[in-house]
Length: 314
Image (cartoon, rainbow, N blue to C red; front, side):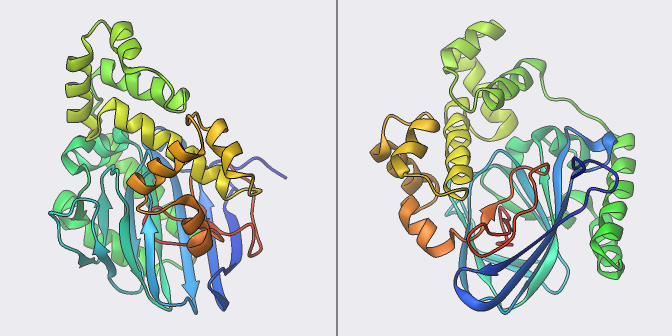
């Protein structure tokens, strides 16, 4: 099997829904063009049919989420920040968050989702990720009229492969027009936390960049919208999501593998970040998988799930 990459690496994944025998989910996933690496983690084209209407939890992760629905607005029932009311979006971008987004699922939905890095937010959207922290905005508000043009062209595209090529072309031109880098100290701290799966002490990060812990925390939060400590929690939580939707090991094993003190500690983190215990999430939505790795192999079948999206279950 060829390793997924830029050319010839669109992956198709098909799965039945865990909540309806008639439901069907198809996702096509691919890494972006080389010029966008480090800015866009992955593209996912999704189609859901005969899904039981209800509410899906969009879970916290290390990426910002950009969603362009292709068959009508996407309705968010509630937001990570309770100060923001729910709403309907023709296209949206959501910042890093430490509480779930609740999405209203209809019987059929289709669209494209992009997982953006904070560097991609700066370069492609023209603002630091911190300005979108725990908030969801209409894509038009950050891209202007180009957002509607992009959506219309994606709707007209004949296939996921054509839509991915269109995204590559559009975003590469944006990238060429404006490239902005975060401050090197916070960028280094971000990558150090990611590489360490959130298990690096903040005071050590601060010492390595030559700043006080307070100064690093303030600058990190300004850039990304989360403090380094909270971002580390999100990374460990994200690892637990990935492990729980794999071969279904014991919760105690997952807790130990992800750096939690014990199973009770992991359960507390899940209630804070996902709004429910991991056992409840598995019972309600565990047949799907959070889409975190664009180079993962294809997964099919109701127990292995399709790729679940940060905002849209797919």
